[in-house]
Image (cartoon, rainbow, N blue to C red; front, side, top):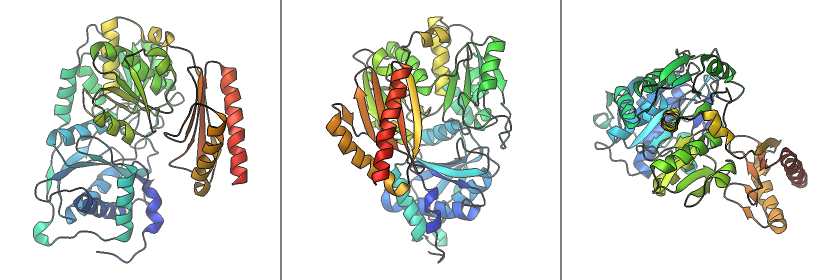
Amino acid sequence: MSSGKDYSSLSHIFRAYDVRGVYNKEITAAVHYRIGLAFGTFLQTNQGFKSGEDFIFTAYDVRLTSSLLAQAFAAGVMTTGINIEYSGEPLQFGACMFTAWKQNAFATAFVTASHLPPEWNGVKFYYGNGVGFSEEDNMKIRDIFIEGDFLQPPWTNVGQMTRLNLKNEYREYLSEKFTLKRPLKVIVDCGNGSSCLSAPEVLKAIGLEVVPLYCSVDPTFPNRSSEPNEETLTELSKLVIKEEADFGVGFDGDGDRAVICDNTGRVLLADITGLILAKYMRTVFPDKTRILANVECSLALEKSLAKPAVIDRIKVGHTFLTADAQEKTDTLLGIESSGHMVFPHIYLFDDAMIIPMIMAELLSAQNVKLSELVDQLPTLYKRRVAVPAPDKVKFKAISSLLKDIKSSYKDVTDIDGIGISFGLESWVLIRASNTGPKIRITVEAESAKKADELQVQFQQLLEEKLKKI
């Protein structure tokens, strides 16, 4: 089947980890129908999907366009002969992935644009166990989407839809996993996003006193950006202090990332939150020694976690986080600097609900203030700058610069870009962006002065290289 229309102009909506675009500009119901055709074709021609036996689960977030796009996508998938279990209502990310996992779905498609503004939308693909599709998989779907060579069986073999979601079972499953030893108060900022649908009631179910902030669904995100960070969580910080809460948590648009705010109103970086959770979890699971952390995570992990703990540095991207956690069975947890985390003793997908639940369990068990735990960690200074670099030359620049740096520095890695280590004192990462025309330089050091010096030094090196290229 091919419409004869050239769809190559939409190749850019297929990213390393998902599909994203602006509604009525790049993303329409017709485009999502075609993505469904490509997805269904890919599963049957590349992944060993068995029509009539296997099925996929499809759900969507609270965006105004998500229901429409999810139905269009599902129609495309069913056209290729695949049966679908369909949520029939918006879900938080964790409830979507839990349903697929418990139902033993072959794959999952979640219609969302995560933390992006409300006019955006797209879709994320996962296997049934929660491991995200690789960039290679997504590019194969892109190629099928563009070429239009879709499977289209006769009317007797089109896929069928069943409506189902396990959001209540999701709440019950998590509430049984956690027990608090003393009462705690938490401020929950859902940012009017998909977490409104489950987060407050799940946290209440384990005995937390929940004070809601922006916990009514509003797909226009009127109160703050759906990207949670120090700038957007100022109201959360203020309310934590005002209510004398034990901590606060702010979720992103679809609920796969959570940012923690301590009892003093301080918004914590994801790797610092991960480190605090890792120190506690090692006492609970002493046989689990591996902590997965991407190359951008803080050196505080190595400085704070003694052997037998192993800090396993991996590529940036939540797909690598979930895939490595599946492969390495001794994994305690996985930490992504953007805020994704994986806790394999619960399940493999990066459900942000687990982050505040383990934090609550930790604080109730240790009878300690979160700010005290933060203050015990080593003080390090991080700098990050983005240097403009055209897509056509950015990876070539990294490759050329890597050769120069390897000849000048001893401890250099190319796990994901260029990593230069100076022991437990400082490090530098030079990495081409997967999503835009830029190269990011991240540095971390024991002093602000050293961090500034490293940033200037390596930014100059990179800019000189870009001029030559």
